[in-house]
Length: 107
Length: 116
Image 1 (cartoon, rainbow over the protein chains, first blue to last red):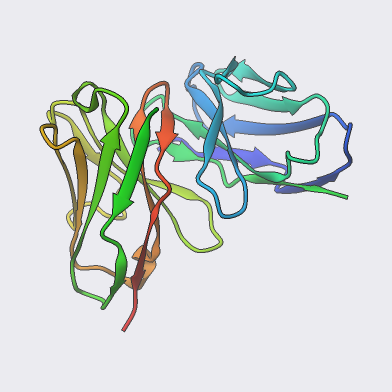
Image 2: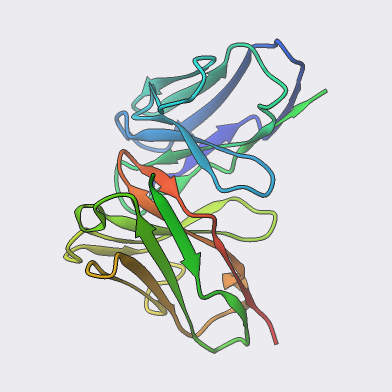
């Protein structure tokens, strides 16, 4: 099974900061990676699909990049509504596997 | 508007069974593969099972293989998860999600608590 390793586990940021989080796959998954945002008490919401494509309605401050085994989600200008847990998902093959999540909080 | 609404959760004793449903609307259900994903309280996301659009392909996580059965009724736009021999570690919020470029739309989830 493909293991997705996310880092950091948590981070504190300020409004206006540039935030970068990482996801590393234990084997080549091509561009079959998505990024999901889960706010407290809500279902996960997909932000990015196929590594770098933004879902409809997702603000352009969210950017995904990477291929193969190394993937990154960047928030260019942290906003007050962005604190959440962010998960990566590999959907290259079943079983689909998620990273353990990066918890993003405001200072 | 795509909507996925889960139901059928509740409190169940270890070793017993429970069947979850997920009713889909706002898209042609029969054209899409569907998944179940779960999230234990305070924990991360775990993929559970997948069924293709015509039920030809079915996959399970090792943690539920042999105990859970995924199925669907395209005439009723409904996805199911039959859970048997339930264990305390199956306690979680269960989501259904559509397969498209990964998992694009998710339901709101239904809680399953396994406890005596």
